[in-house]
Every structure is written in structure tokens, then in C-alpha cells.
Image 1 (cartoon, helix red, strand yellow):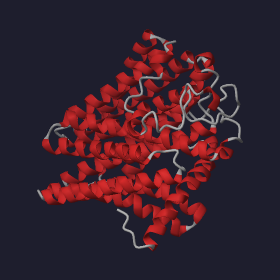
Image 2: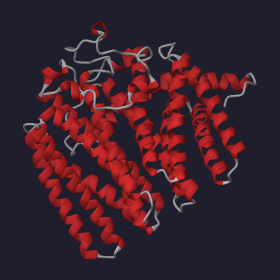
Image 3: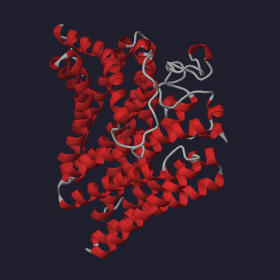
Image 4: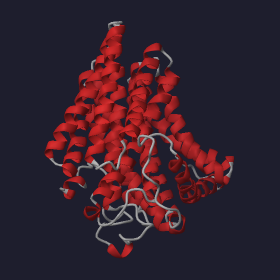
Length: 459
């Protein structure tokens, strides 16, 4: 097994927002982690890195597949470029699988994975041609795929994953993408983006199940670390919300400049992403604290929207004002994070990382407007992957700051629901995010309120 390849296929991740001096953990710092411990108080381990890698590529697959299906039915100019990005995602995911099971298995995986993407494209084509028989044929092909692919994964993992449960999970994946597409095509955009979000979230369950099976199968290659610890769950939870934010923000900016009918629904999905994080604060500290956080997070989203509006109006002064507001926000928010983590994260380096986030989304948008779709989707992928570095650094600081919240509770069992969706262990682990992240973010809320009370402006 080529473990080195496994742990390096995750691009543009931790080093982007959290350089070496900022990260709360280092794989070489053995004194900070006990690989034989039942409860690892470290988010950055070989096992959790594998999980993050799979989470990245699997969730990005769902996101890009949905975007590609929308672009296909719309006959959009950037359809081929979205498909190319989806192909790049497949290559990255294939490399991760091949690094564990070898090139032959990687080739088999690629062939089956490409086939199922092709079946989704066939479904879109048949829909565009109002070919009901073609639609049914595509769905039948997807049904055969899920059975064959489930057998492949069961065999590869030496039956650590069950084919029947896997097939159910894969059916969920198919249903979510098809429903999201059908609802989009029918103009039921709110329902469509509910399924978009569910489709993305589902793949984090797949990543957890697959990484847990691989680590159990090749435990020596992962130094005895586990992929399903409370600390790893926190990292995955933050990776999910943060990467979804980046993906939805990029698409919302596209929809805005295009004047698309689903712009409001896309923005609504982005707001729901914000509300989930804000609800964590409100559930512990009350509605006022939740509203204070939501206001700050929403502000930076509004600055991106202002940039889109100014671009549509060819208002260069408005564009610059939006960028200036984003610049002020990143500096202020970086200071919040440094204080909240008791300097476990460095404000100046955080500000640099937040600038990358801004540059990636603005770069993706500008390139899209200019018709340079290849560059646009390169930036979109970088923006999505970048947030996994944010999740790693942020969760690392939280775990280091509040280790007592991650010392109890057995690592969750292998998901039996096809590795996706909100299974019982996902719900049980959510208290970790609520307790630790709320403690972490409470100090941010306090600083926001204090600055407002003293008349200081927070951008």
C-alpha cells in the first residue's frame, strides 16, 4: 500500500489557510498523540487525513455532478468545463483508491465510476429530448451500477462493508441527484437545492464508512490511528459546512450575474448553511448570541453579492468597495479567531488564508464572467478544497483548547446505512460540534457584542 500517496492526494488543503506554524497538530509530534489510545485527541492523524481526502473528493463529486446536470439541461456554454472538472475529480478519487488497493483496482474503480457519471448524463440528455424510455434506461443502468459497485467495494474491503447496505446508500446517492435535477428542471428550485445539500452531506457519510473500513483493513499503515474518533468527527463536520459554503457561494455568484431564475433558491441554500452554524450558537447561548454570529457571517456573504451586483452594473467603484469590505472583514475576523483560540491560531496567517478564500471565489467569478470557464472551475475546485484546510486547522485548535470534550465516547461504529445520511452515530456525535464549536465561537460572539457596545465598527 502506498500510504504516502494516500496522504498527499489532498490538494490545497491545510497549508493554504493554516501554514505549518499555525496548525494545531503535526504528524511528527508523537508526544501530542497516542496512536494506541482509544480516544485520539488530535484531528490530524493518518486515518483522519484519509477520511478528509475521501470526504473532499466524494462530496465534490456530488456537488459538481449536480452543477453539470443543471448546465447540461440548460445548454450552458460552460457545460463541457464543468464535466472536465468532474473528470478531474474522478482522477483524483481514483488515485486515492489506487494508492490503497493498487493500480488494477484503481482502473476498475475509474471505469465503474465513469460509467455511473455517464448514466447521469444519459438521463439529462433523455430529459432534454423528452425521451421517457431513455430516462428509464438510464435509471436502470444506474440500478445495475449500484449493485456491481457495491460488490466491488465489499470485495475490496474484505467484507468490512456490506454489499446490501452499500447498495442502499448508493440508491440514496442516485435518488438525491436525480431528484435535485428533476426539481430543477420543473422549476421547483427550493426543493432542488434541499436535495443538493442532502446529496453533498450524504457523501461525508460515505467517506467516513469507506475510510473506517480501509483503516481497519490496513491498520499498521495508519499507525494505529482511527478515522471515526470524536476529534475526526468534528473535523469532518466543519469540513462539510465550510466547503459547502464555498461551493454554494461560487454557484450563487454565477446565478446572480446570469440573472438565473434559481438565484433566490441558491442564495437561500447558502443562508441555510449559515443558519446551521448560527443555530449551534443559539442552542447553547440563546437567540441573541446566535443572531449576532449570523449577522457577522452573513455580512461577508453580502460583500460577495455586492461584488456581483457591481459587476453586473459595470460599477468598478462598487467592485472595489466590496473588495475593501472583504479586506476589512478578513482582518477583523482573523483577530476574533486568534483571541477565541487563545492564540492557537495566528491572526496574521489567518488573514492571509482568508485572503485566499476571497481571491479564489472572486477569481472563479471573474473568470466565469469573462468566459474563461476552465480557469473559473479550477478556482472553484481550489476554493472547495481550501475549506478542508480551514476545517482541519479550526478543529485542531478547538480540540487542543477543549480536550475534555473529546475524551469520552467510543469511536462510532461502521455505518450500516450505506455509509451515508444521518445515521444514529452521526446524531450522537453532533453534541461534540455543538459543545466544542459553541465554546470556541462564544468568545467570538462576545467580542462582536463588546465591540458594538463600545461603538467600534465590525465589517
